[in-house]
Length: 385
Image 1 (cartoon, rainbow, N blue to C red):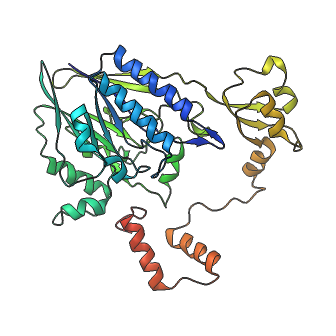
Image 2: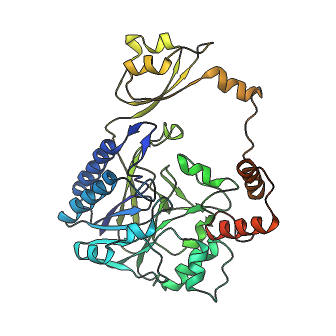
């Protein structure tokens, strides 16, 4: 049997407001190493968004290096791809050299998916690595294919791989996958990409039919989409208030004979949790209500009037208080007393408003056409728009 851990969305280098999370991220990666040893994993799969931004801080790069080195020292193979938060070229750097240590990297789509194979008593398991890819990138390698959108692009890349479906195949991918038009459960910063102006377009889970296990990245909530073997691992840590109720896990996958895939969620316990507390300030500071003060805390105050230096007061008791809001403000939004910016504007409306704000004049038709073309190349607009 081939056993592996599936993870994604490490977002190394991320912070919560002014709080650097590198120490927390090192702690959780050490937990992953422990689990990999405990479960006798043959490999660890990292399905994109290794870093939180294209140019990561030095500490984040060093932490990933330490993590990969620790796995290689234990002869645990690593399969990793770039995500939409990563710089594909930076992730891909050194990939040829890394292969000698059992670390297989695909940061850049190169027109052809070449499998890496692990053998067991049932035969080969082929691992295919598809980094985050735009329709324009696939079209450049397959000019004769009909590629109108992301779904077409991924299908073309997979068809060209020529997978032998009589043996076991595993795919790593970092895309926004839906099932019959139904979106996955969202959480974290990636939920914003489902709006009209976003960075990732939808792909049907049926694009992966015939593949024994699909290790997805991009969505921070662990879940299957379409069928149990097409799965988001979710992020290993909570990275936003929308994730406060998540139970973070690593996905343990055991590949038995063809047609038998066992999937388990292994809990990941953080160094510090992320929590949301609510109440009047005086109540929250009572000794009997203070628990786990080192956690990262989002606070909703129910006091009727704003309190001077509420953040400073709270941080004396909860030093990692991330942000504060007031219940009365939330209620005002619900009752319509506060007018929120419209988030359903078209791309053209957003660009027009932005252009007028910056330059104080209307954008010309030629300039709009240029912006639309650039946005489609960047994957911000549907290719059919």
